[in-house]
Image (cartoon, rainbow over all chains, first blue to last red; front, side, top):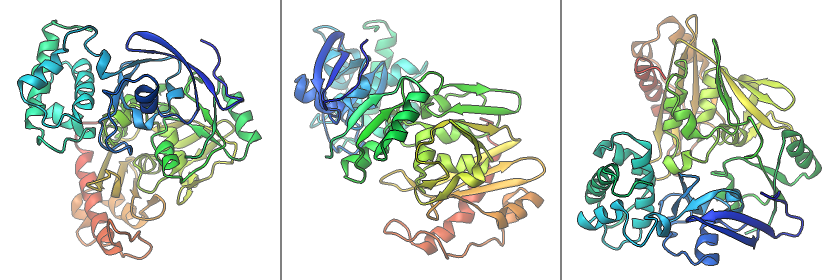
Length: 169
Length: 266
């Protein structure tokens, strides 16, 4: 990995996004979410508040869920980023996406990509995914439509389906 | 938004050199405060020096009598400590902001910023920790100096924070329901022969409530607080909470922290 230094205000960013290597010259002040949406055209990652409250911009950086509105793209240099477009790892749906449909866990859908990215982290990081755990761990994701009940149900069901091995990552 | 340069420092020496060569340069740890403040135009660094690649800064080391937390240790990592020597650190870290923020935010960034509404300063002061920098060790009692101010020199870099293991510790905060930031918090640490009480959120800077420490050193129980009251003088008074309300909350936050002393040690 080449050293990352800026003498000219443009940095040569090299990282992996959804399994593919990406190289691009960017401004140091470009947010990760701006890079994902505007430079790569991956618009599934949403910007709800831009103040790290709502979680709509949640992506994974080296597997950890982060708010991409509050991270510079250059901070992800050399790392692996996964967005909602890459979560299923193929053409089908991820078990959490299927569970959100089955449990009617969305109305307008704006918060859904962030909810699912956080839910996937919850499922991978915990041996047992209970409704209580999901409520605590979705603290940083806001939904202004559904009132969370169906979301919690969907995360519990989706996590169980992931455990079933249908889509192990 | 103001433009800046960015360099990922490869070593502490490089970070120190860069920081010393530009008075407008800032260190970038997790960025969970620095970047929101930058977006709001509250800071305008010429250069961000990212510390994430410097080896050893994220380590947690548990020794017989101390726990040393590397400056770049993320809150999520501290929250996963199974046995933090009854320091209460895991409990405190698990309650900072939300999971995504905890995956990036660091202890070094939190205490260098010294926001009165941040959590970690209460633990550092309450536990009588030592802040270790690239050139010296600073006692907690001398580290936090005023609103967003610390004893750090302009080109000084926090390397780690060393916490003594104590008998028991507990932390409780009344969080602002919208932002999650601390309206009033209390950290109570039982050292066996004495008790320390640190209060955050209430004044411009975290502080020790020495009158309460004397009471609790005699009798570490909520009963000891029966007649304890706090005057609203010098307390923060803002649109979130009046000084009188904060004065009302302080003894209650201390009482809740005492109740937590007896919960699962971590």
